[in-house]
Image (cartoon, rainbow, N blue to C red):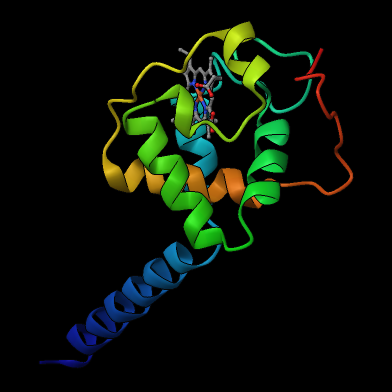
Length: 133
Ligand code: HEC
């Protein structure tokens, strides 16, 4: 391999590593999935569209779970097959908005979106019982 080839090889390794590291940190990927697939029903903050705002959901999930891994797992399971008895929101959220339709996204995409949703938690956001009214 000549010197030029070496430089190319080195650059590819660096770029690959950078891409890998990027995926490990909080990436904008979850937000992109949200913008494309969730935001037409879920707003980030009140007023609500046709579903509870994300900050309200994040609040309820942080109340229900102490570990991110468990909260994320529950969200992914819920989004694949929503069931009223698995809901971590207040009962009136489901009666006000109806049950979320099952998502057609892949398990990996749902996990990325759920992790992003979990990380969107803002302790300063409080709307107990109002569901974003
Ligand atoms: C067609 C409208 C719609 C879309 C699209 C949608 N949702 Fe929902 N979602 C709802 C409604 C309505 C609820 C409230 C009732 C419920 O919990 O099922 C809800 C509830 C939730 C909940 C709380 C589940 C619980 O414990 O009750 C999570 C988490 C959630 N959505 C995440 C998402 C994510 C992430 C996406 C995108 C991948 C998404 N939703 C797309 C309508 C939608």
